[in-house]
View 1 (cartoon, rainbow over the protein chains, first blue to last red):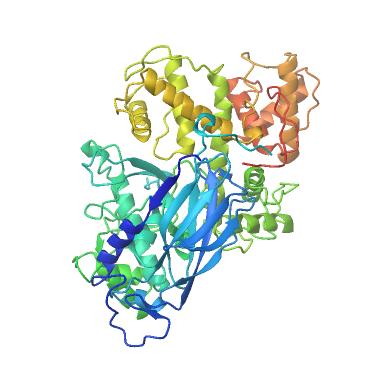
View 2: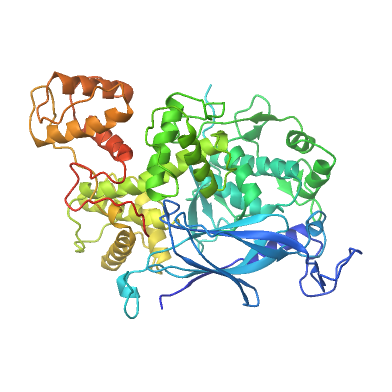
Length: 163
Length: 469
């Protein structure tokens, strides 16, 4: 398999949390808001928000769309949520994803107001690209641009499929 | 009165200014702003707070560029992504759709002090953990927006006396937004420009329906093409060309053109030669340097860690910087000198990227200037090619009289050349030198539809409808 390219946004997420929050933590003590519901997860507050994620795959910057790329969306535990294929504009049709409730982004607090998801993009002739901890907010569509890098013949192991 | 020009691209250093271990990345200015806003604030804040913050972020970045803050201190970038010095930018991150749409609209708007040309150095801070007198408070802007403040009022309350500059000129964009949206019923040159651009973008993005008659009349077919373009590029799909759509069409067209032009530039460098001859370094000049610059530019189209350079055959500081960036990206020592190892790595990277392009992008480019001026009385194959180019162009630019491809440059051909020169701002002399030839060949390339076999192209050029990756 060709070498995979990986980008992890968790470091950036934590930097944002530090700037915006009162010491935002994940997986620790519950937050300060009193109207928790049954969708609450300790340390993550209400999880009944919904965001959306669209992936846009191109090469040569944005000059050329990549059609037929396989896009796998997982949660950060690695469980696959959806698999989509890009159209002739390089886009997926999009998937709805869980996110913390909108209320957590309106004042500084210690609940992270977005969820992270992992995106893996595979296309014949290109390095596989993985993006970890892609941010999704309640009521917002996230657009993840992915620019694929071509793989050289000498960098492939085994036979290359031709169609 | 000279006005500040918004750059097409911005070079971002991915660390503190003196951190030499990190890379620089070149990004389009609109994409930079989208990334900054997506990294600095929450997208589900009230819209007026988002707009106010984004105007501050835009002004901040433009101030760095206008004052040449970093280059004047010897650095080879425009701004950093360190929040201690500048603003957050997370390379490769996701962008929020609402932020994307606001950025496409606001990217060339900025605030200044009244009567001042300089974009304001609009400092800001979160406003909760830190405060910045005279600067915008991010959390504070949320409260003000919730109270009904407009974006301008929010900014005024933090920055005091300010003016808003709107729709500033953009580098390499000679035609600013016409000022009123183009829609069904609109007519004129601006409409024609949009139609031609969409048709050309549609060669790479086949979901955009072809506008069979790009005649400057905004009809339903044009509206459908606009709407599909908007859907693909995350704009409101209303079929109307407002400011955001106008500039987005220009930027995407420019990216599509650049790729085809690199393909044509291949002709200038002659037969591709992978043999290493001798080391190249700053101070050298000549053909080998030009070939090197061509390879670097091609690689730069695929890899925004590599800056592109002028293909002038002179190995100056810009070329050295590009070589060093390439060496850094492949793990070689950043000497700025192209020895055999570096040369082989560059050539290999170029070949891989070139071979990844669909067939129709590997044509060898458009017909080169025949090397002699074509004028009244000239005859031959080059004249025939010229006439075919003009015939196709005249179908869209109907002011140009149609010519037959007889191979003889008579009065009719001269009249067509003169009209072409008038329309495209060239000196009206009625003969075809290199400047005129290249302009005509480029227009032909833009206007020729994907099914048509292009005359004068090198053998093997066979365009197909399918733009498979």
